[in-house]
Image (tube, rainbow, N blue to C red; front, side, top):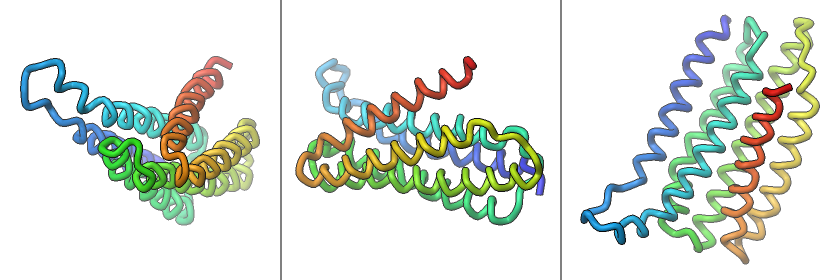
Length: 189
């Protein structure tokens, strides 16, 4: 199958996920600046999730670059990856409303961990396809190591979130910002 359909479908799902997340930012009921303070936690949860989703979108694009055809397993793994991302608006909204509570924070962290694992599985499958078709994939090892390391760190921080809830959001924030900076560095090389 041609990769264009996969890219178009995936781009649409990425756009929908981001759109759903921004809908959690409710317009204040009054015209006073003081009303803005009530949406600050939700805004920061949206911002970090947006950076996270955008990083995945960039990585997804880079993975598929040079790949001409895809097999059915890639379609299914891509669907699984998009499914895990589609849960993110729920956990983003919940953590935005209750930023210091264990259940929303841990759920937020779990959303990131499962998305990273699904992305890792998808990237391994795409790397195998590239190898099978003699397409160079020089950055795969670095990306694989990075994704596994960041996933492990986030999993540990998510576990600690049962005792120290804010550590989950802090970890997600640092990892999301790191991913954005890291991808910017890759593109300069």
